[in-house]
Every structure is written in C-alpha cells, then in structure tokens.
Length: 117
Length: 117
Image (cartoon, rainbow over all chains, first blue to last red):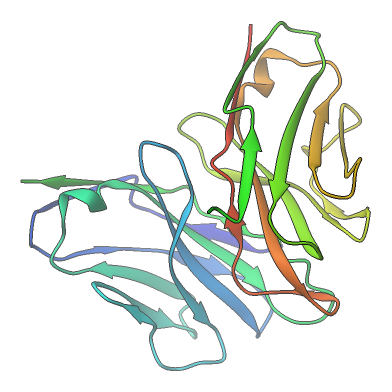
C-alpha cells in the first residue's frame, strides 16, 4: 500500500519570504502522480500543483514549485514570495497512474502554514 | 462555476439517524469519490464509483455506508445509522473519465460538514 508522510505539522513564514514544505512517500509503483492541495479555512480543497513521476523536470506554477526526487521518494513544495493568502493547510497526495487506475488519492497528514505580515 | 457542488454544506443529525450527502457534477462520464476528514486530521479515502458500481472502497467504508447515482446525475453517500465518530467533513471529488482510466486532475466539492450529536 502507498503511504504519504508530511513530517512538519506546522510551518511559518514571513510575508514575501520563501518556505519549503516537505513530503515523502512510499510506493512500489514506477508510474504515478503527486499533488499538492491547499485547504484554506473554508476547507475547500484546491489543487496547487501536480507532478508526473515519469517527468524529470520539476513542475512550477507561478510562485509554487516542487523538488521531485524520485529515487529518494521525496516531493517538497516551495512557495516563493509568500502572501497572506497562502496561509492554509497543505496536503501532499499520491495517485497511481495507468492500468485500471480509478484515481484514488492517498493524502499525507497535512502541514499548517502560517504567513506573518 | 465549480465542477462539482455538494449539499448540504452543514448537516447536524442525531446519533442513530440516517443521513444522505449529495454531490452534483457538471459533466457526465465521471469517476466519483468520497473522502472524509475528521477535524484536524488527514483526508481519508472512502470509496470510488464508476459506471454505476463501486470500483474500490476502504476499510472505513463498512456496511453502514452506501453510494449510488439515483438519477444518473446526483451522486449520494448514505450513512444508515450515524455514530458520534462519523462527525467529519465529507468531500466529494470527481475525475473525468478517459476510457477506463481517470483523468489526472481531481476536482473537489466544497465539502459537507456532518455533526452527529
């Protein structure tokens, strides 16, 4: 079974600074997707960024980028130029790809990010 | 317009009562999922549903839970006899189908907060 671990229950950052959230996972699969979801106080789940395991290039979305280390099974999220609106719970998630994949997501425990003005 | 809408946003019910949570997607030909998030904890997979049948279910999804698409549009989660520990946020999510596999991105509803008293 796949597992996803986020070892940082809480992180904080000053506005305009950079912060990195950590995520490790365990799987025997070679082809899969990894995601970061943001959950603000409204509790809506919002997709931040995704990475396909077969791609070596790290995904980027504006101020958000990932450091994907497939051999180490590590998938960290870097938020640059942090904004007050980035404050939320962040979840790392895994999904296998291909075969009879039904798209089930396995989530980590989450990291609460606080942004200080 | 969101890809998927959930109703109600908040439901309070007495222990032992039945509840039905609803999910309404915009598009057809979708994979459906229910996830649960107990307050302060991680998001847990309950069940996936495709082509009018359950594709996969977790250990949490026991006999007191059931899912269906009664009218080909709405997707419902029924809890037959609620317990205090069923109090949680319940999220519906969808993937658009591509043949027998699910598309990459999952769209989440805004969630239903279930409180069992």
